[in-house]
Image 1: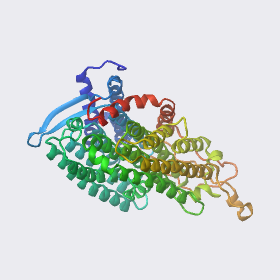
Image 2: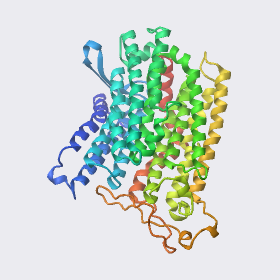
Image 3: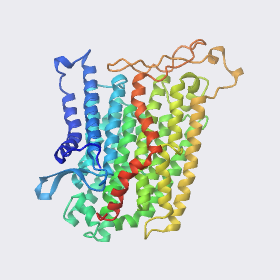
Length: 562
Protein backbone atom coordinates (compact mmCIF):
# COMPACT_ATOMS: atom_id res chain seq x y z
CA UNK A 1 0.00 0.00 0.00
CA UNK A 2 1.30 3.44 -0.94
CA UNK A 3 -0.17 6.84 -0.16
CA UNK A 4 0.57 7.98 -3.71
CA UNK A 5 1.63 5.91 -6.68
CA UNK A 6 5.17 6.84 -7.76
CA UNK A 7 7.19 5.04 -10.43
CA UNK A 8 10.42 3.26 -9.34
CA UNK A 9 12.57 5.64 -11.41
CA UNK A 10 11.07 8.67 -9.66
CA UNK A 11 11.63 7.00 -6.29
CA UNK A 12 15.28 6.43 -7.24
CA UNK A 13 15.62 10.08 -8.21
CA UNK A 14 14.02 11.27 -4.97
CA UNK A 15 16.40 9.26 -2.79
CA UNK A 16 19.44 10.40 -4.80
CA UNK A 17 18.19 14.00 -4.62
CA UNK A 18 17.76 13.77 -0.84
CA UNK A 19 21.37 12.64 -0.41
CA UNK A 20 23.03 14.93 -2.98
CA UNK A 21 20.96 18.15 -2.80
CA UNK A 22 22.34 19.35 0.57
CA UNK A 23 25.89 18.88 -0.72
CA UNK A 24 25.15 20.91 -3.84
CA UNK A 25 23.37 23.45 -1.66
CA UNK A 26 26.46 23.76 0.53
CA UNK A 27 28.58 24.57 -2.52
CA UNK A 28 26.01 27.11 -3.72
CA UNK A 29 25.92 28.74 -0.28
CA UNK A 30 29.58 29.70 -0.64
CA UNK A 31 28.95 31.48 -3.96
CA UNK A 32 27.73 35.09 -4.26
CA UNK A 33 23.94 35.38 -4.24
CA UNK A 34 22.30 36.27 -7.59
CA UNK A 35 21.38 39.99 -7.74
CA UNK A 36 17.65 39.37 -7.52
CA UNK A 37 17.91 37.12 -4.47
CA UNK A 38 20.08 39.14 -2.12
CA UNK A 39 17.20 40.46 -0.06
CA UNK A 40 18.14 43.04 2.57
CA UNK A 41 21.74 41.86 2.81
CA UNK A 42 23.97 38.90 1.79
CA UNK A 43 23.66 37.30 5.23
CA UNK A 44 19.89 37.14 4.95
CA UNK A 45 20.20 35.72 1.43
CA UNK A 46 22.40 32.80 2.48
CA UNK A 47 20.22 32.02 5.51
CA UNK A 48 17.17 31.99 3.25
CA UNK A 49 19.12 29.70 0.91
CA UNK A 50 19.65 27.25 3.79
CA UNK A 51 15.94 27.23 4.58
CA UNK A 52 15.10 26.68 0.92
CA UNK A 53 17.47 23.75 0.43
CA UNK A 54 16.54 21.97 3.66
CA UNK A 55 12.86 22.59 2.91
CA UNK A 56 13.22 21.03 -0.54
CA UNK A 57 14.96 18.01 0.99
CA UNK A 58 12.16 17.56 3.56
CA UNK A 59 9.50 17.80 0.84
CA UNK A 60 11.37 15.16 -1.18
CA UNK A 61 11.62 12.94 1.92
CA UNK A 62 7.88 13.25 2.60
CA UNK A 63 7.05 12.42 -1.03
CA UNK A 64 9.45 9.46 -0.82
CA UNK A 65 7.69 8.27 2.34
CA UNK A 66 4.30 8.69 0.62
CA UNK A 67 5.48 6.60 -2.34
CA UNK A 68 7.00 3.94 -0.09
CA UNK A 69 5.20 0.58 -0.28
CA UNK A 70 4.04 0.10 3.30
CA UNK A 71 2.94 -3.46 2.55
CA UNK A 72 6.58 -4.43 1.96
CA UNK A 73 8.65 -2.42 4.46
CA UNK A 74 11.24 -5.22 4.67
CA UNK A 75 12.07 -4.82 0.95
CA UNK A 76 14.71 -2.31 -0.11
CA UNK A 77 12.96 0.36 -2.19
CA UNK A 78 14.09 3.32 -4.33
CA UNK A 79 17.31 1.41 -4.95
CA UNK A 80 20.22 2.61 -7.07
CA UNK A 81 23.13 0.26 -7.71
CA UNK A 82 26.03 1.57 -9.80
CA UNK A 83 29.60 0.26 -9.91
CA UNK A 84 32.01 2.83 -8.47
CA UNK A 85 35.38 1.13 -7.77
CA UNK A 86 35.34 -2.17 -9.69
CA UNK A 87 38.69 -3.35 -8.34
CA UNK A 88 37.26 -3.43 -4.80
CA UNK A 89 33.68 -4.13 -5.90
CA UNK A 90 32.59 -0.90 -4.21
CA UNK A 91 29.24 0.26 -5.54
CA UNK A 92 27.09 3.37 -5.20
CA UNK A 93 24.25 1.39 -3.70
CA UNK A 94 21.34 3.32 -2.20
CA UNK A 95 18.03 2.12 -0.83
CA UNK A 96 15.56 2.46 2.04
CA UNK A 97 13.40 0.11 4.05
CA UNK A 98 11.23 0.41 7.14
CA UNK A 99 14.29 0.82 9.36
CA UNK A 100 15.99 3.67 7.50
CA UNK A 101 12.94 5.61 6.23
CA UNK A 102 11.90 7.09 9.63
CA UNK A 103 15.49 8.17 10.34
CA UNK A 104 15.71 9.77 6.90
CA UNK A 105 12.55 11.81 7.47
CA UNK A 106 13.60 12.73 11.03
CA UNK A 107 16.96 14.02 9.77
CA UNK A 108 15.35 16.12 7.04
CA UNK A 109 12.80 17.54 9.50
CA UNK A 110 15.28 18.47 12.23
CA UNK A 111 17.67 20.10 9.75
CA UNK A 112 14.89 22.25 8.30
CA UNK A 113 13.76 23.31 11.78
CA UNK A 114 17.35 24.23 12.65
CA UNK A 115 17.67 26.24 9.44
CA UNK A 116 14.43 28.10 10.22
CA UNK A 117 15.55 28.79 13.78
CA UNK A 118 18.95 30.03 12.58
CA UNK A 119 17.32 32.38 10.08
CA UNK A 120 15.99 34.42 13.00
CA UNK A 121 18.54 33.48 15.67
CA UNK A 122 21.94 32.90 14.09
CA UNK A 123 24.57 32.04 16.72
CA UNK A 124 27.44 34.49 17.14
CA UNK A 125 30.41 33.50 15.03
CA UNK A 126 32.11 33.90 11.67
CA UNK A 127 30.48 34.08 8.24
CA UNK A 128 26.85 32.97 7.92
CA UNK A 129 27.86 31.47 4.56
CA UNK A 130 30.19 29.03 6.27
CA UNK A 131 27.55 28.22 8.90
CA UNK A 132 24.89 27.35 6.31
CA UNK A 133 27.37 25.36 4.19
CA UNK A 134 28.48 23.31 7.22
CA UNK A 135 24.90 22.54 8.27
CA UNK A 136 24.09 21.36 4.74
CA UNK A 137 27.21 19.16 4.53
CA UNK A 138 26.25 17.70 7.90
CA UNK A 139 22.75 16.95 6.60
CA UNK A 140 24.08 15.31 3.45
CA UNK A 141 26.44 13.03 5.39
CA UNK A 142 23.75 12.00 7.84
CA UNK A 143 21.17 11.27 5.15
CA UNK A 144 23.75 9.30 3.19
CA UNK A 145 24.55 7.20 6.27
CA UNK A 146 20.92 6.07 6.46
CA UNK A 147 20.58 5.52 2.69
CA UNK A 148 23.79 3.75 1.54
CA UNK A 149 24.00 -0.04 1.30
CA UNK A 150 27.76 -0.48 0.82
CA UNK A 151 30.11 -0.84 3.80
CA UNK A 152 32.77 1.53 2.48
CA UNK A 153 30.21 4.13 1.43
CA UNK A 154 28.70 3.80 4.90
CA UNK A 155 32.09 4.55 6.42
CA UNK A 156 32.63 7.58 4.17
CA UNK A 157 29.19 8.97 5.01
CA UNK A 158 29.72 8.18 8.70
CA UNK A 159 32.93 10.23 8.68
CA UNK A 160 31.54 13.03 6.52
CA UNK A 161 29.67 14.56 9.45
CA UNK A 162 32.67 14.91 11.76
CA UNK A 163 34.37 17.94 10.21
CA UNK A 164 31.23 20.11 9.91
CA UNK A 165 30.21 19.34 13.50
CA UNK A 166 33.76 20.11 14.68
CA UNK A 167 33.64 23.57 13.10
CA UNK A 168 30.09 24.26 14.28
CA UNK A 169 31.25 23.67 17.85
CA UNK A 170 34.69 25.30 17.53
CA UNK A 171 33.60 28.47 15.68
CA UNK A 172 29.99 29.06 16.75
CA UNK A 173 30.04 27.46 20.21
CA UNK A 174 30.17 28.96 23.68
CA UNK A 175 32.67 28.70 26.52
CA UNK A 176 35.38 26.03 26.21
CA UNK A 177 34.35 25.41 22.61
CA UNK A 178 37.84 24.67 21.31
CA UNK A 179 38.53 21.99 23.92
CA UNK A 180 35.09 20.44 23.42
CA UNK A 181 35.49 20.39 19.63
CA UNK A 182 38.91 18.73 19.85
CA UNK A 183 37.61 16.15 22.29
CA UNK A 184 34.72 15.38 19.94
CA UNK A 185 36.89 14.97 16.86
CA UNK A 186 39.62 12.93 18.56
CA UNK A 187 37.21 10.49 20.20
CA UNK A 188 35.18 9.92 17.06
CA UNK A 189 38.16 9.71 14.69
CA UNK A 190 39.98 7.17 16.85
CA UNK A 191 36.82 5.09 17.07
CA UNK A 192 36.37 5.33 13.32
CA UNK A 193 39.87 4.04 12.57
CA UNK A 194 39.10 0.87 14.51
CA UNK A 195 35.70 0.61 12.84
CA UNK A 196 37.26 0.82 9.36
CA UNK A 197 39.48 -2.16 10.14
CA UNK A 198 36.42 -4.19 11.12
CA UNK A 199 34.52 -3.18 7.96
CA UNK A 200 37.50 -4.14 5.78
CA UNK A 201 37.79 -7.48 7.59
CA UNK A 202 34.15 -8.31 6.82
CA UNK A 203 34.41 -7.18 3.19
CA UNK A 204 37.63 -9.05 2.45
CA UNK A 205 36.65 -12.25 4.22
CA UNK A 206 33.17 -12.43 2.71
CA UNK A 207 34.16 -11.15 -0.73
CA UNK A 208 31.66 -8.29 -0.86
CA UNK A 209 30.95 -4.96 0.75
CA UNK A 210 27.28 -5.06 -0.23
CA UNK A 211 25.21 -4.75 2.95
CA UNK A 212 22.12 -6.44 1.49
CA UNK A 213 24.12 -9.47 0.31
CA UNK A 214 25.92 -9.65 3.66
CA UNK A 215 22.65 -9.46 5.58
CA UNK A 216 21.14 -12.23 3.44
CA UNK A 217 24.23 -14.37 4.00
CA UNK A 218 23.71 -13.83 7.75
CA UNK A 219 27.34 -14.52 8.64
CA UNK A 220 27.48 -17.95 7.01
CA UNK A 221 30.60 -17.01 5.01
CA UNK A 222 32.39 -15.67 8.11
CA UNK A 223 33.92 -17.83 10.82
CA UNK A 224 32.97 -17.18 14.42
CA UNK A 225 36.41 -15.77 15.21
CA UNK A 226 36.19 -13.32 12.30
CA UNK A 227 32.73 -12.26 13.45
CA UNK A 228 33.94 -11.72 17.01
CA UNK A 229 36.87 -9.56 15.88
CA UNK A 230 34.66 -7.61 13.46
CA UNK A 231 31.98 -6.94 16.08
CA UNK A 232 34.61 -5.77 18.56
CA UNK A 233 36.26 -3.40 16.08
CA UNK A 234 33.10 -2.02 14.45
CA UNK A 235 31.26 -1.93 17.76
CA UNK A 236 33.90 0.34 19.33
CA UNK A 237 33.51 2.89 16.54
CA UNK A 238 29.72 2.76 16.70
CA UNK A 239 29.70 2.88 20.52
CA UNK A 240 31.74 6.10 20.53
CA UNK A 241 29.20 7.79 18.24
CA UNK A 242 26.17 6.39 20.14
CA UNK A 243 27.63 7.21 22.84
CA UNK A 244 27.94 4.18 25.12
CA UNK A 245 29.31 4.37 28.63
CA UNK A 246 32.31 4.61 29.23
CA UNK A 247 33.05 6.09 25.76
CA UNK A 248 30.63 8.95 26.33
CA UNK A 249 32.81 11.61 27.95
CA UNK A 250 33.06 13.74 24.80
CA UNK A 251 29.28 14.22 24.66
CA UNK A 252 28.55 16.50 27.67
CA UNK A 253 31.38 18.86 26.74
CA UNK A 254 30.30 18.97 23.08
CA UNK A 255 26.66 19.66 23.95
CA UNK A 256 27.50 22.30 26.55
CA UNK A 257 29.76 24.21 24.14
CA UNK A 258 27.75 23.73 20.93
CA UNK A 259 25.32 26.37 19.65
CA UNK A 260 21.63 25.51 20.01
CA UNK A 261 21.21 24.11 16.50
CA UNK A 262 24.47 22.16 16.89
CA UNK A 263 23.12 20.50 20.04
CA UNK A 264 19.80 19.72 18.34
CA UNK A 265 21.51 18.05 15.37
CA UNK A 266 24.05 16.27 17.54
CA UNK A 267 21.41 14.75 19.83
CA UNK A 268 18.62 14.37 17.32
CA UNK A 269 20.56 12.96 14.39
CA UNK A 270 24.25 12.17 14.91
CA UNK A 271 23.77 9.88 17.90
CA UNK A 272 21.37 7.77 15.82
CA UNK A 273 24.12 6.90 13.34
CA UNK A 274 25.90 4.68 15.84
CA UNK A 275 22.86 2.67 16.90
CA UNK A 276 21.73 2.43 13.26
CA UNK A 277 25.08 0.80 12.44
CA UNK A 278 24.51 -1.82 15.14
CA UNK A 279 21.12 -2.71 13.64
CA UNK A 280 21.98 -2.43 9.95
CA UNK A 281 25.44 -4.05 9.99
CA UNK A 282 26.34 -6.03 13.11
CA UNK A 283 23.04 -7.78 13.90
CA UNK A 284 22.51 -9.34 10.44
CA UNK A 285 26.11 -9.61 9.20
CA UNK A 286 27.83 -11.01 12.29
CA UNK A 287 25.12 -12.64 14.45
CA UNK A 288 27.51 -15.07 16.19
CA UNK A 289 29.85 -12.25 17.11
CA UNK A 290 26.94 -10.17 18.37
CA UNK A 291 25.71 -13.08 20.44
CA UNK A 292 29.15 -13.29 22.07
CA UNK A 293 29.20 -9.61 22.99
CA UNK A 294 25.48 -9.07 23.63
CA UNK A 295 25.66 -9.59 27.43
CA UNK A 296 28.56 -7.12 27.69
CA UNK A 297 26.76 -4.61 25.47
CA UNK A 298 23.67 -4.92 27.67
CA UNK A 299 25.77 -4.50 30.82
CA UNK A 300 27.41 -1.32 29.50
CA UNK A 301 23.97 -0.11 28.42
CA UNK A 302 22.34 -0.42 31.84
CA UNK A 303 25.40 1.10 33.55
CA UNK A 304 24.99 4.02 31.15
CA UNK A 305 21.29 4.30 32.04
CA UNK A 306 22.00 4.51 35.77
CA UNK A 307 25.18 6.57 35.40
CA UNK A 308 23.51 9.14 33.16
CA UNK A 309 20.60 9.47 35.56
CA UNK A 310 22.83 9.83 38.63
CA UNK A 311 24.92 12.45 36.83
CA UNK A 312 21.72 14.37 36.04
CA UNK A 313 20.57 14.14 39.65
CA UNK A 314 23.95 15.49 40.79
CA UNK A 315 23.70 18.41 38.37
CA UNK A 316 20.09 19.14 39.32
CA UNK A 317 20.64 19.42 43.06
CA UNK A 318 20.70 22.83 44.72
CA UNK A 319 24.15 24.38 44.93
CA UNK A 320 25.73 22.11 42.31
CA UNK A 321 26.04 24.92 39.74
CA UNK A 322 24.80 22.42 37.15
CA UNK A 323 24.42 23.51 33.54
CA UNK A 324 21.00 22.68 32.07
CA UNK A 325 22.47 21.86 28.64
CA UNK A 326 24.97 19.53 30.31
CA UNK A 327 22.16 17.84 32.21
CA UNK A 328 20.22 17.18 29.00
CA UNK A 329 23.43 15.81 27.45
CA UNK A 330 23.88 13.34 30.30
CA UNK A 331 20.23 12.36 29.94
CA UNK A 332 21.07 11.34 26.35
CA UNK A 333 23.63 8.87 27.70
CA UNK A 334 20.84 7.20 29.66
CA UNK A 335 18.31 7.25 26.84
CA UNK A 336 20.78 5.79 24.36
CA UNK A 337 21.48 3.11 26.96
CA UNK A 338 17.90 1.90 26.46
CA UNK A 339 18.51 1.78 22.70
CA UNK A 340 21.64 -0.33 23.19
CA UNK A 341 19.84 -2.63 25.65
CA UNK A 342 17.13 -3.28 23.08
CA UNK A 343 19.72 -4.09 20.41
CA UNK A 344 21.60 -6.38 22.80
CA UNK A 345 18.50 -8.54 23.33
CA UNK A 346 18.71 -9.57 19.64
CA UNK A 347 14.92 -10.04 19.63
CA UNK A 348 12.34 -8.35 17.36
CA UNK A 349 10.69 -6.80 20.41
CA UNK A 350 13.92 -5.34 21.75
CA UNK A 351 15.24 -4.10 18.40
CA UNK A 352 11.88 -2.51 17.52
CA UNK A 353 11.94 -0.81 20.90
CA UNK A 354 15.46 0.43 20.20
CA UNK A 355 14.43 1.90 16.84
CA UNK A 356 11.33 3.50 18.37
CA UNK A 357 13.42 4.96 21.22
CA UNK A 358 15.84 6.35 18.61
CA UNK A 359 13.08 8.35 16.91
CA UNK A 360 11.51 9.40 20.21
CA UNK A 361 14.86 10.62 21.53
CA UNK A 362 15.43 12.65 18.38
CA UNK A 363 12.08 14.39 18.73
CA UNK A 364 12.09 14.96 22.50
CA UNK A 365 15.75 15.80 23.09
CA UNK A 366 15.82 17.98 19.99
CA UNK A 367 12.92 19.94 21.49
CA UNK A 368 14.64 20.09 24.89
CA UNK A 369 17.81 21.58 23.41
CA UNK A 370 15.76 24.14 21.49
CA UNK A 371 14.04 25.14 24.75
CA UNK A 372 17.24 25.27 26.79
CA UNK A 373 18.81 27.42 24.08
CA UNK A 374 15.86 29.82 24.28
CA UNK A 375 16.12 30.00 28.08
CA UNK A 376 19.85 30.69 27.83
CA UNK A 377 19.18 33.44 25.28
CA UNK A 378 16.76 35.12 27.67
CA UNK A 379 18.90 34.82 30.80
CA UNK A 380 22.42 34.70 29.40
CA UNK A 381 23.06 31.50 31.36
CA UNK A 382 21.94 27.88 31.63
CA UNK A 383 23.15 27.55 35.23
CA UNK A 384 20.41 25.77 37.16
CA UNK A 385 21.07 27.57 40.45
CA UNK A 386 20.75 30.93 38.71
CA UNK A 387 17.62 29.84 36.85
CA UNK A 388 16.02 28.49 40.01
CA UNK A 389 17.13 31.26 42.38
CA UNK A 390 15.76 34.68 43.20
CA UNK A 391 16.96 35.97 39.83
CA UNK A 392 15.83 32.83 38.11
CA UNK A 393 13.21 31.64 35.72
CA UNK A 394 9.98 30.66 37.49
CA UNK A 395 8.86 30.21 33.92
CA UNK A 396 5.25 29.41 34.72
CA UNK A 397 4.75 32.96 35.95
CA UNK A 398 7.11 34.86 33.66
CA UNK A 399 6.90 33.03 30.32
CA UNK A 400 4.03 30.58 30.81
CA UNK A 401 3.97 29.05 27.32
CA UNK A 402 7.72 28.48 27.40
CA UNK A 403 7.45 26.96 30.87
CA UNK A 404 4.58 24.70 29.84
CA UNK A 405 6.46 23.46 26.79
CA UNK A 406 9.57 22.76 28.88
CA UNK A 407 7.46 20.76 31.33
CA UNK A 408 5.86 18.87 28.43
CA UNK A 409 9.27 17.96 26.96
CA UNK A 410 10.53 16.90 30.38
CA UNK A 411 7.64 14.53 31.08
CA UNK A 412 7.94 13.16 27.54
CA UNK A 413 11.63 12.50 28.20
CA UNK A 414 10.91 10.62 31.42
CA UNK A 415 8.64 8.23 29.50
CA UNK A 416 5.12 9.31 30.40
CA UNK A 417 2.58 6.88 28.85
CA UNK A 418 0.82 8.42 25.88
CA UNK A 419 3.97 10.21 24.67
CA UNK A 420 6.72 8.94 22.38
CA UNK A 421 9.31 8.27 25.08
CA UNK A 422 7.21 5.55 26.72
CA UNK A 423 7.05 2.92 23.98
CA UNK A 424 10.74 2.56 23.23
CA UNK A 425 11.68 2.06 26.88
CA UNK A 426 8.83 -0.38 27.51
CA UNK A 427 9.63 -2.52 24.46
CA UNK A 428 13.35 -2.69 25.27
CA UNK A 429 12.54 -3.85 28.80
CA UNK A 430 10.14 -6.46 27.42
CA UNK A 431 12.88 -7.61 25.04
CA UNK A 432 15.32 -7.95 27.94
CA UNK A 433 12.79 -10.07 29.84
CA UNK A 434 12.94 -12.71 27.11
CA UNK A 435 16.21 -12.34 25.14
CA UNK A 436 17.19 -14.27 22.04
CA UNK A 437 18.03 -17.96 22.18
CA UNK A 438 21.55 -18.54 23.48
CA UNK A 439 21.58 -15.48 25.74
CA UNK A 440 21.39 -15.80 29.51
CA UNK A 441 17.82 -15.11 30.62
CA UNK A 442 18.75 -14.48 34.31
CA UNK A 443 21.42 -11.97 33.27
CA UNK A 444 19.10 -10.08 30.96
CA UNK A 445 16.30 -10.04 33.51
CA UNK A 446 18.79 -8.48 35.90
CA UNK A 447 19.60 -5.90 33.24
CA UNK A 448 15.87 -5.33 32.80
CA UNK A 449 15.46 -4.63 36.53
CA UNK A 450 18.38 -2.19 36.50
CA UNK A 451 16.96 -0.45 33.43
CA UNK A 452 13.55 -0.18 35.09
CA UNK A 453 15.24 1.40 38.12
CA UNK A 454 16.86 3.85 35.70
CA UNK A 455 13.41 4.99 34.56
CA UNK A 456 12.62 5.98 38.16
CA UNK A 457 15.85 7.98 38.37
CA UNK A 458 14.99 9.66 35.07
CA UNK A 459 11.61 10.69 36.43
CA UNK A 460 13.30 12.05 39.57
CA UNK A 461 15.76 14.39 37.87
CA UNK A 462 13.33 15.57 35.21
CA UNK A 463 10.72 16.49 37.83
CA UNK A 464 13.40 18.29 39.85
CA UNK A 465 14.32 20.32 36.76
CA UNK A 466 10.66 21.21 36.15
CA UNK A 467 10.15 22.21 39.78
CA UNK A 468 13.26 24.38 39.94
CA UNK A 469 13.17 26.04 36.52
CA UNK A 470 9.45 26.33 35.92
CA UNK A 471 8.40 27.13 39.49
CA UNK A 472 11.57 28.75 40.83
CA UNK A 473 13.20 28.61 44.24
CA UNK A 474 13.29 31.98 45.90
CA UNK A 475 15.59 32.82 48.77
CA UNK A 476 14.06 33.81 52.13
CA UNK A 477 12.38 37.21 51.91
CA UNK A 478 14.43 38.71 54.71
CA UNK A 479 17.70 38.08 52.91
CA UNK A 480 16.74 40.03 49.79
CA UNK A 481 17.23 43.69 49.22
CA UNK A 482 14.32 45.59 47.65
CA UNK A 483 16.13 45.49 44.32
CA UNK A 484 16.60 41.70 44.55
CA UNK A 485 12.95 41.20 45.48
CA UNK A 486 11.84 42.80 42.22
CA UNK A 487 11.72 40.24 39.43
CA UNK A 488 14.29 40.50 36.66
CA UNK A 489 13.06 41.15 33.17
CA UNK A 490 14.37 41.26 29.69
CA UNK A 491 12.62 41.72 26.44
CA UNK A 492 14.37 38.66 25.05
CA UNK A 493 15.62 38.31 21.50
CA UNK A 494 13.54 39.83 18.78
CA UNK A 495 13.23 38.10 15.42
CA UNK A 496 14.96 40.15 12.78
CA UNK A 497 14.96 37.99 9.68
CA UNK A 498 18.63 38.78 9.17
CA UNK A 499 21.84 37.44 10.61
CA UNK A 500 20.07 37.31 13.89
CA UNK A 501 19.79 39.21 17.08
CA UNK A 502 22.14 38.21 19.84
CA UNK A 503 21.15 37.14 23.36
CA UNK A 504 20.06 39.98 25.53
CA UNK A 505 21.68 38.30 28.50
CA UNK A 506 20.55 38.41 32.09
CA UNK A 507 21.26 42.04 32.82
CA UNK A 508 17.86 43.42 31.90
CA UNK A 509 16.22 46.03 34.12
CA UNK A 510 14.33 44.86 37.19
CA UNK A 511 10.98 46.47 37.63
CA UNK A 512 7.87 45.58 39.53
CA UNK A 513 5.59 46.55 36.68
CA UNK A 514 7.08 44.42 33.88
CA UNK A 515 8.05 41.11 35.51
CA UNK A 516 7.50 38.86 32.51
CA UNK A 517 10.05 37.58 30.03
CA UNK A 518 9.46 37.44 26.31
CA UNK A 519 7.43 34.29 25.81
CA UNK A 520 7.60 32.03 22.75
CA UNK A 521 8.31 34.02 19.59
CA UNK A 522 6.50 33.09 16.37
CA UNK A 523 9.66 31.71 14.75
CA UNK A 524 10.28 29.57 17.84
CA UNK A 525 6.72 28.24 17.69
CA UNK A 526 7.24 27.28 14.04
CA UNK A 527 10.46 25.42 14.89
CA UNK A 528 9.16 23.66 17.99
CA UNK A 529 5.53 22.79 17.24
CA UNK A 530 6.29 19.92 14.80
CA UNK A 531 8.46 18.20 17.41
CA UNK A 532 5.83 18.50 20.13
CA UNK A 533 3.05 17.35 17.78
CA UNK A 534 5.03 14.31 16.58
CA UNK A 535 5.91 13.42 20.18
CA UNK A 536 2.19 13.19 20.94
CA UNK A 537 1.36 11.43 17.66
CA UNK A 538 4.05 8.78 18.12
CA UNK A 539 2.89 8.20 21.69
CA UNK A 540 -0.77 7.79 20.76
CA UNK A 541 -0.28 5.87 17.50
CA UNK A 542 2.92 3.82 17.91
CA UNK A 543 1.67 1.28 15.36
CA UNK A 544 2.46 3.70 12.53
CA UNK A 545 6.17 3.54 13.26
CA UNK A 546 6.23 -0.07 14.48
CA UNK A 547 4.37 -1.16 11.35
CA UNK A 548 7.32 0.12 9.34
CA UNK A 549 10.14 -1.25 11.46
CA UNK A 550 8.81 -4.64 12.60
CA UNK A 551 8.76 -6.53 9.25
CA UNK A 552 12.19 -5.14 8.37
CA UNK A 553 13.58 -6.15 11.77
CA UNK A 554 12.05 -9.63 11.51
CA UNK A 555 13.71 -10.15 8.13
CA UNK A 556 17.01 -8.66 9.27
CA UNK A 557 17.25 -11.00 12.27
CA UNK A 558 16.23 -13.96 10.10
CA UNK A 559 19.08 -13.34 7.67
CA UNK A 560 17.01 -12.00 4.80
CA UNK A 561 14.37 -14.74 5.10
CA UNK A 562 11.07 -13.15 6.15
